[in-house]
Length: 368
Ligand code: KG4
Ligand code: ZN
Image (cartoon, rainbow, N blue to C red; front, side, top):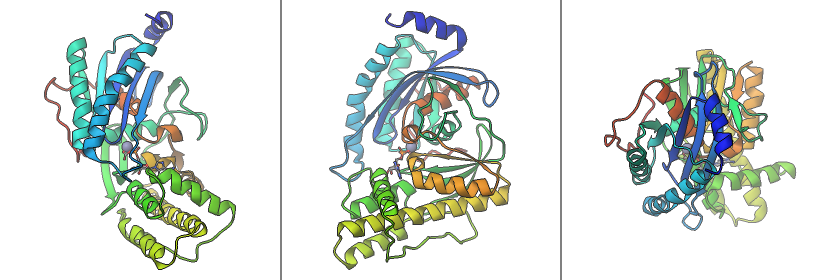
């Protein structure tokens, strides 16, 4: 064993070794962590490996389930080999994402996890992908741009906590009363925030995934101080509820694109105005929920939480409201298996193991 001395030391200090597997959308992830302690009390963990393979869907402008599924099938054994090379120790538990997500993709992870569990005689834990995003935002890291340190624990925070989950498939405001106890306050009625970024990017002729591309152009527009002549709507921002809608915003961008030829400057200003509009709505609705529920903490998760402008706007407004903001490091905001291993640990601690052979993929799985 290549890493025997370090792993022996680790095994003395940590109580459980968890292999996490993530295949809910277009990123394949396998991670191995060692962890100990209770949620919010004395939790500590060590990242032994965290491998992600992101698929190249740029040429399609989105995810094609069957292409993504075949990529997962190809990537999983390769990633496992990398993880096992870094740490050959057997896990105590295998945690796998069972939903929400693209069902053919979820099945590839589940099937792979079940085979490993049988081969190694270790129990399985079924993890909700969105709980993974929540847990990731609660992990301690030095600053917004830092990676999670190898050995780490949880941020201190107070309840009630509000989770703003913004990803390619979801946009949700959730009240978190404790680990595992969630209440949905609102969600998108049409497109998810990340989906809107991806679709608008496509309209602007930018590659997939659109979030980082739009963010780059918007930052350039802000640096050069170019304002948009077109004012986009802030859908549902002032409505007295916690729901969102982004498809009208996308349509407004399409109209603006079709109105006159799309030159580089127009791309910059539209990217900026679009990002401003999304940030305004997300921040506005989150603040409304903070006030109504007396939230002490807001945690943000999902791929869109990597967005610098949205983080900065949330940070600015929440500090005025004396509310703590917790965000994951940008590199761990998008899908990864570390978050699944972490969520799996807390579920395993509660003894929530899945009967082998009974796990099913649930594309529309909720947190309650
Ligand atoms: O959580 P995630 O990796 O996958 C899902 O569970 O959906 O989120 C992916 C989404 C994509 O729509 C992508 O465009 C968006 O996150 N995204 C961003 C940024 N980075 C990724 N959106 C805005 N700004 C970013 N910097
Ligand atoms: Zn996600």
